[in-house]
Amino acid sequence: MTSGHPQQIRTGMLRVARLLCIGLICSLLGLILMGNAARAYNVYQDLFVMLSARPLGMGGAAAAVSDPSSVFTNPAALAGYRGLRLMHNHSARHFPGSTEGGQSEWDQLDGDSQALVIGLPVGTYAHGFTFSGEMGYDFRGHPQDGALGYPREQYWGTQSVDAFATSAALPLRGGIALRREFSRFTPAEDDDYGIAWLRLGEGQQTGIMARVWPGLDYGRSELKMDYDWTLLEADGSRNAYAEFTSRLKQQRSGWALHPTAWLCLASDEVQENYILENDKGQTLDKLPGLGVIHTGNAKRRRLLNGIELQIGNGLALRRGSFDGRPTLGMSLQLPFLRGNYAEVEDLLPEIVGSGQSFKDIHIYGFETDLF
Image (cartoon, rainbow, N blue to C red; front, side, top):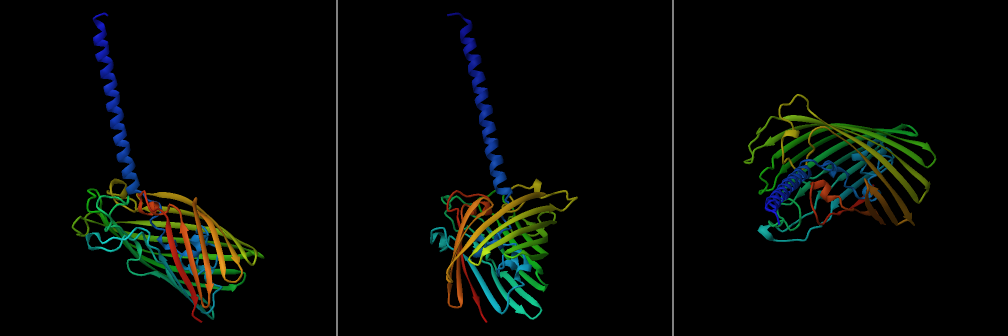
């Protein structure tokens, strides 16, 4: 054995140690960046408005399907309604209950969309809304050890929509809706980087729906929403940072094919573009830990499709794909009342921005003709 071997061994061990250190540092940086990305960018946070049982059961395809929930998706599809109809939806409990910390609920989600549709001599008026705080989620009562895999934060929101539709130029229908939203985000107490915020939104939606062939309908709508943001300090004081604005532009187009009276095939394409206010020294891109909001300008495209099968006069079965996530649903017709149910696989973590358990969304509701 020569005297140079120990030196070579030491040099080799140092190289291995340096490589291990570099690998460890890169892995830690990757985990940090992945964590920040998961919490700071979320593409589903504005979809609470879509949580209505019938369209969700069909994968969310609703541009050319007449339903009371059309007040949120395409107001033109309301034009065929007469009389007075009420729609109610509620998100079913998903997390197990607990009395930890004096709180008795571990609710999965609040996505309770309501609508009142009124047929008028010259068209159809509809009012869609969620009750105060029934658009969002509140996980502050979750176990402190994080056993359920979701941050102990709150996203609180409410909304109202007023829509009018007419079909004076058959087979073409047209509609317009005015929408108002208010939401508030409260980060988890143990989130050192979380930032609380308030958001006020106003905008309008226009839509058309046309019978292009017997049994084939086409629908298209365009939504423009302007948002005013206020970021808050940890103690809740206002104007912690410069206020700013953003805009959402959403275009929805789709088809509904009715080859028979008992079958409906529907498909939608949704294009969205978030635009952040220009010329701001401090933008969302530069602020970490903002929770369930978008950061900076973003474009995205979603594909929604589904099928509805009527079995006799009392039962309907639904199946679909909500942007690649399987959905299923059903409805049962009772005297003066139709009950609806839908579920979507693995959607909750996308809305919240993180989560490893209890991922499915469950919505049930009813529709009734008042007269």
